Image (cartoon, rainbow, N blue to C red; front, top):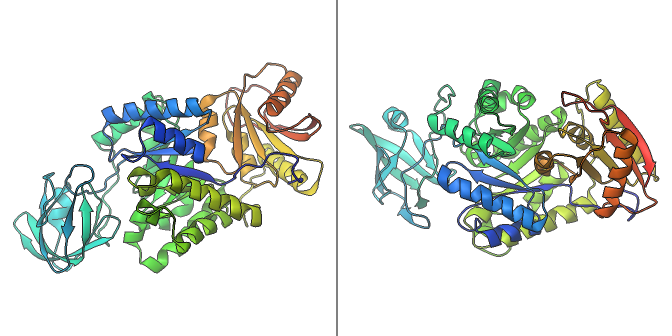
Amino acid sequence: MTGSAARRTRTTKIVATVGPASWDRQTLERLLLAGVNIVRINAAHNPIDERLELVRTIRAAAQATGQHVGILQDLAGPKPRTGPLPDGESVTLRQGELIQLTTGDDPLAPDRISIDDPDLVAALRPGQRVLMADGLIELIVVAREGTGATARVVRGGRLRGKQGVTVPGAPAPPRTLTPAEAADIAFAAEHGLEYLGVSFVTAPGDITMVRDELRRRGGRAAIVAKIERPEALRAIHDVTQVADAVMVARGDLGVQLAPEEVPIAQKRIIAVARTHGKPVIIATQMLESMTTQPIPTRAETSDVANAVIDGVDAVMLSAETATGRYPVEAVAMMDRIARAVEAEFPCGPGPGALRPDTIASTIARTASDIARRSPLVDLIAVVTRSGFSALEVARERPSVPVVAVTNSQFVANQLGLVWGVTPLVMAFPDDTEALISQAGAALIAAGHARPGMHALFVGSLIVYHEPGHTDVLHLRRL
């Protein structure tokens, strides 16, 4: 960037999962002020009646703090889960013990684990591995017992309620929408959520199926493909092309792959996402030790740093902010790491990026090139109604700040996930010159620029009936 001419914000965004440790109004406000850009809600752990109140609290916290914050709701997906336990309670499984695996939804006991997928339990055979809690707990089946099975604890630990269950190597059944998922999609549409995460994607059709249902319900959420299955990894180009964003969901992916294969898969997914110009999120155990302690390990710090160096759009906190003892501190630490790394390793365009020969991509690429080569340009102001133009500019990873000027609060919230983009909401006049002049004044008023600075205006300055038009590149002294 050109010295200190424009205010440079953190370019890597932060996604934080909310739960019992963070879903009260006061803590949410502290999380947003500490740097959270997107709040994640896991539908598997939040009934719809509780979720509605949570969404209202998030919106109120965002308004109170003056932040543009999007909400990402994960669909539960076809993930078998253990039976319930009250929040904060767990059972301890010890190595060598025999455990009964049963179907149903009975509360967990030290010698009995219920699993809510009867087909999975019925298919268990001696010798199969059963992993729980993101693979931290491992059992091996030793015998069939009627409709259930007996398993021996290979790797024990504390098991909380409603934890995921995986049988490595078991084929994934055809993806269909469960009634619960359909209800969650309807909830996202009704309450204007900005992102919808699709769990256990196996093929591009899974994304299309969810998007069709969402649009049928009148929803506008962007679809995040969570890469957790080997099938999705094999079809990563096709899945990424259909999705609006992708998430490297290392928890479930890590129980399907050998540990040494996970970082290789992560690098591949990031490269593909950047090639297609789609936002990419790195998730799971980024600062896991901060669930119980106030500072991360050096390895965790390096994990976050390497994701930032790779140019990901966002890094995500899960248990750290949902159930951990130090949710605000975890966000603040992630913010510190990202800022320190960005200062030393500026991000540029990804190698081999697919830049289609459209007017929009050409203008975005030209704007980034001009900003990178000319000391005259202080920032790029993207005028966007749908967010499309901002995404086109962000994929180029320009060297100056990017402010997305939009007339939509929804779009501003959604752009909270996109690398380097700071949203600014204002009403759009019909006249092009008035729009540029008023946008320039709004940039100064919001503190993104000062009089005398030069801004490259990019975007569609004419009202089109369909989004996706970028046809203007204009340099203006503010």
